[in-house]
Amino acid sequence: MKGLVCLLLLLETFVCVVQHQVDGGLNDNEISQQLRSEDGGQNPPQTDTLRDEASTDSRQNYHLCFTDIHAALRELTATVTEQKINIRALETQLKEQQTFILEEINKKNDVILEEMNKKNAEMSNLTLSQVEGLRKENIEKEIAFSASLMQSGSGYIGPFTNEITLTYRKVFTNIGNAYNPNTGVFTAPLKGAYMFRISVYGHGPTAAAASIFKNGERVVLAYAGQPQRELNSSNGVVLILEVGDVVYVRLWPNTRIFDSDNNHSTFSGFLLFPLREQELCRM
Image (cartoon, rainbow, N blue to C red; front, side):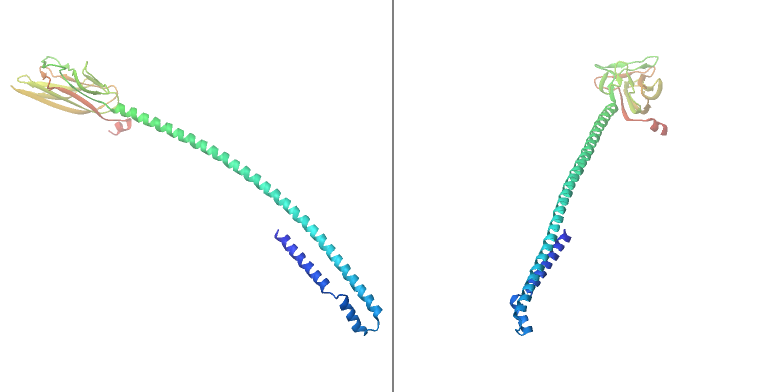
């Protein structure tokens, strides 16, 4: 477009120059005066002839010049029109390309958004699953019990010539239901470290004694004996239990223990923390 503008300016300048030459040429009077001065006024017919010929030549040059200018302008106009058509075609093509690019971008954005929504949904579901799993795991970890020997009233149990398993019937706490008050046996619901304690109470001269057993083996003993008056003892132990291991209390032979509404003789236990296989191997 800049080239076309420059060409138009050049043509306009050329027209002005030609017009100046035509307008600035000798007119009829000037030609006559010049001829008179040269010939001294002796040949008037020849002067008129020269004047007519000069005027005719000027008009012919003028018409030829403007004919060329009009042809150039027509050619330039055609070129400009063609350029305008090309520009419109380019603009249309650019708009089509822009529309296509925008559509492709929108499609890609839709795909990306859909994938992000799927990932967010998966993460949300995973988080909910993890929370539910942790909740269940924490519920499983809530294991604790405590019970007293006599459910009601007061009295002695023992002495017996052989050991017997004591059943602590008055249950204060039994979170996780791992303790059975009908049998006096605690069964481990999961692998872990557990704390157990017993307390025994009696009156002399008969001793009071009881032991904590794990899977049929004695672990610790609580024993108290004196000739008269009250006597009591307690003991505790931390045990590593596998799932299904059992812990219970047995009365020592030829001893007795006493209990009442004051709950003197008790058996308690709770989970300290669960254990995995790796943790057991390190131990």
